[in-house]
Length: 527
Image (tube, rainbow, N blue to C red; front, top):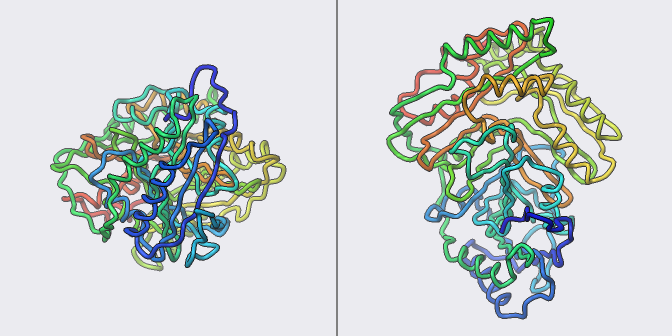
């Protein structure tokens, strides 16, 4: 069921039913699945609801911690759409308050408050996809299936970097945006887990209650309750061929064209982010979830995600950059720009970090991003605070300049305003935004798709989106398409920017055979 509807359908009409039912806790995923199947059978055997539309989530707490990515990888024999999202460690991410049901018994053995670490989903109770740019109507179409009282009913997905550009064949299944409320979901908490199933129906969208249950039953038949643990050590696929778009010669020309515009008195362009697509053809199909498990090993303080619509490759990533997080009226974002490699020794790492903090060129690139986001916050929010205003953000392979922004929305419906105003940030597009976007569309000869676009989830009281960088499109005959970009400002050097692209894609290339040593290149990164 596509929740976007169409025609004159009143997409803002509230659903008749939005409900979460929590069953007694189970000791293992297998027994949790048995409990879910029994509850689904009771739904099927009982009278249909009088309401023409609704969404019901049935959840079973599990008294042991099982990693959501392990559960999702154990469902490898299915062709159903799937999603995965792992939040970043953050002090402003709220705790999820678990509820008690009635059929619905109390969730015995499950703490009243648990931090939700990651979510894996299989099948879609309702999806949202269209070819037109994501609009306020689309946002309302999603939000009508969500509720503050059912915080774990969420829509996971992503949007294109530039929804006005043509969609390449590899991105066709994603449309201009794609979101899904999972039919079957596995939630990983700090000390426990949860298995859940969701049905959604709306007769005006040609989906009845009975059809929703039948679809869920078909998905549950494909769910494996035997969870095989991923160890993060994937078999490295041999690369048969590698192609960069642009190649080095074309990259040099593109950077020089951008620099000419930046220095021109007839142009207002201050910064543009140019990207590269690297296609790797391999002897065997790459398992995107195996790659994601390997990325998690060095993914502390980063978001990991996987989104795979039906009959499509998987969009995966390990991104450090938050677009925004909303908790009711409070909204948080950050500025992240300028790049250096990490040093191989503590003293070298300190020296490289100090050079980054004192670099006038990098400060300019960073300040452009920070002040642009501050201005957008001040337009939408009643108050804005920037603290810290400039510090180092150290990741396993790179370090950046970083600032945190906090604001207060006037009303929760302003979420769409903050999303549409923040994307694209100067960190992935440039400044002024429209001038940079036009130049990107003229220079880049590949489709960014969801790369550098918003990726995350909408909830009732909360929503969170990362920026889809450090990402790749994997599987379904495409091999692997790796994406990386770098900011071009006055003083940029095309050779050094190319080396930065190599550094940013190294987290994926290390998973391939015959990888060239990175150490020599990393020491040369001085931006």
